[in-house]
Amino acid sequence: MTRKQFKAESKRLLEMMINSIYTQKEIFLRELISNASDAIDKMYYKALTDEAINFDKDSYYIKVAADKEKRILKISDTGIGMTKEELEINLGTIAKSGSLAFKNENELKDGHDIIGQFGVGFYSAFMVADEVTVTSKAISTNEAFKWESDGADGYTLESAEKESFGTEIVLKIKENSEDENYDEYLEDYRLKAIIKKYSDFIRYPIKMELTEKRLKEGSESEWEEYTDVQTINSMVPIWRKNRNELTTEDYENFYKEKHYGFDKPLKHLHISVDGAVRYNAILYIPENIPFDFYTKEYEKGLELYSNGVLIMNKCADLLPDHFSFVKGMVDSEDLSLNISREILQHDRQLKLIAKNIKSKIKSQLQSLLKDEREKYEQFYQSFGRQLKYGVYTDFGSNKDALQDLLMFYSSKEKKMVTLAEYVSRMTDDQKYIYYASGETNERIEKLPQMELVSDKGYEVLYFTEDIDEFAIKMLATYNEKEFKSISSGDLGLEEDSQSEQTEEKDHKELFEAMKKILVDKVKDVRVSKRLKSHPVCIATDGEVTIEMEKILQAMPDNQNIKADKVLELNTNHDVFTSLKNAFETDQEKLSLYTKLLYSQALLIEGLPLQDPVDFTNDMCKIMI
Image 1: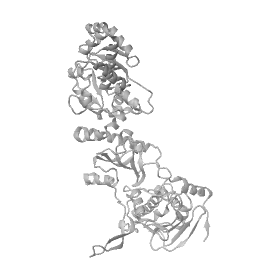
Image 2: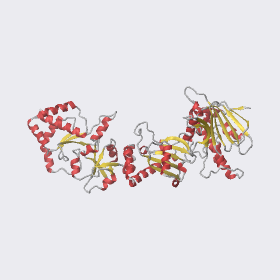
Image 3: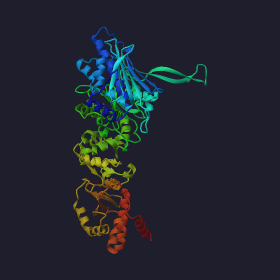
């Protein structure tokens, strides 16, 4: 028996395979099972052209067995097998893919496809094994051969005994080290978990001999061990079944089996595309928000399969951020994989799938909004915030696609409404879409600024989330209607009359005096056109509103950005009479009144007082 050496470049590649290409050692089992599946597929294709081969699917399977004492793991199949020459070519030359050669030489039919492309997956076995032995008997010959290697030092190839055709791979599992626990690859429960994770939808049975305990017949307390051969994988994936054969319960069970969430999905979407790029997908809109959804720890993405083999647990490139709440999987035969079959090349196929999925999700949400309003509102309560982030981020590139999915609470309808519904109720004389911002709907309703807009009979949208105003500023308009905060300096409700201009002029000296008292706190003091029963309020000039100031100030890296505040006074209120009298007779009292009114306006807006002690002292002065 002569030991043969790998070629120098193959030796370097093998060392790289063991140490660099694969990020997770458990991947080795996926690769060996995929190779076994390919071997059975080749039998299927041979049977199509060779009448002497009877392809009885029940006779073809993959078997995984572990022997803890001997530290042996076996993976065997009843596939086409390999001749001596094929063993030499496929295993003696690293990166020589027998599967790819077979695929190129044969026309694949009936939706089957060979998994292997690169001829490197087999060598992942050396990540967990000190020694690998392959015994194979090809369907075309009565001879069997054994290929054996302990890694980069080379391999031996000799005749062997094997009763049936197919291939058996024996791994001598490494001893544990300080950093690695190799024992786990000899545990039935761990092997079963890896198979379910990566190879659950291989089309042939993957069998394991499992030892379990059960109560002895006729006994209530005595247990006995029994060994049973079980099929571990599901084989036929749900996404390849006809939609007409599946029930809502089937989809919900799949959702649970894949651990997409602990809730029930609110809606599912089953996609089958056979065009420029072929893929199947099952997507879910969850009912409840994951506990870590708005944290850095949350990972978006869909499970990605290639021919039923799991390639990635979370393929983030398949989902835009604003649809990151979607769960599910995608399976495609057309993806360009890299050598480790772990990471996708950023190719045209992936982008086409992602674009199509984004369109499908949007259509599903629109349908939910139109036909199942209650369900949509339930969804929006959990994930509406993410849609608003989608409007705001990426410089508003997604705002047109998402604007019709947005909802806000309406002052008139007393429920959530869409922008389209708001605009449909606008009167001919209404110039703007009005909104108000605050911590809660109840607080917004009590804002002094609501008085004039409400008296005009105009509907107001309530913004209670920190992202709301930022998203609307990015949106700017809807259906050619501009958004306007009820705290804006100009509400566009009426033009200044001559009497108002005169009133502003008459009180100019008082307002200038108050501005000096509130120096660096307000931009201006002026007559209010929006107040009726309240004495004072704060309006803003410019793009930054009061609510935006609160949010920006709360950020760790805030740059002390503040709104340009304007103190507006109701000249018809009794308080204003007191202000005028103080201005004429007592400047100290004017200063006291001015500071108190400003503090009152801040508290109404939910803004903090710069000096609460000073405020309480001023209150005491009023009472003395």
